[in-house]
Image 1 (cartoon, rainbow, N blue to C red):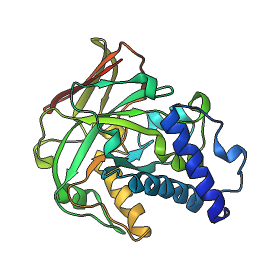
Image 2: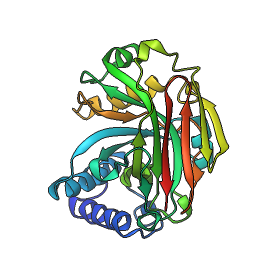
Image 3: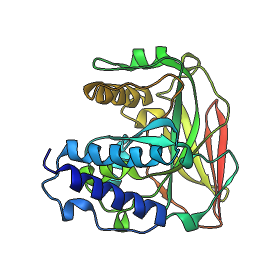
Length: 262
């Protein structure tokens, strides 16, 4: 690690305050160009500990930048991983207050709910599917704390991969009852299709993102707990939203889920 513990704690407090106060900032590697991957995840972990100390509850995990479209959009080359806490949950059909966000975007996702714990190394798609209880449609609302949504991988990891809100819903289905590679998705904004895709856009198979997450956690002595909700990553590029927008995700064979922005 290149940063000392005091700096990690200061950056975690700063980034979380940016999230809580809906205030943007230049990416932190501008002022800490020597920070490494361990530093980035240590900052993310410290943000989580700050939330847990105030009574937050971990409800799941997320993979980010898992599609080639998202990687191109954000100018990065590798997936990243983050946490989901209960303050991010939005119930199906509920309203998101855009005043609490900086510059929100939505991503269509396939969410996995785990019936068994999953741990790397050596985790693969087959192990993920065997450990999955069901899959369902999900919309993640991302909201990078970095100005103009411009960041590098280490900065976005520290910022908990732009996590802000999420909703899951529709019709849960068993993972062996659907081909997650070919399943089609349509993201609609205000009744008009704005993004189309298929599950294979996420690393060839959405379960591959979950396997990468399990292997990442395994290297850190951690695992994906049973009962976790895992967002496998955006199937398409993220779509900007604003107050007044109504967003619906339709996933072939899994129904739909929606959000309203006010």
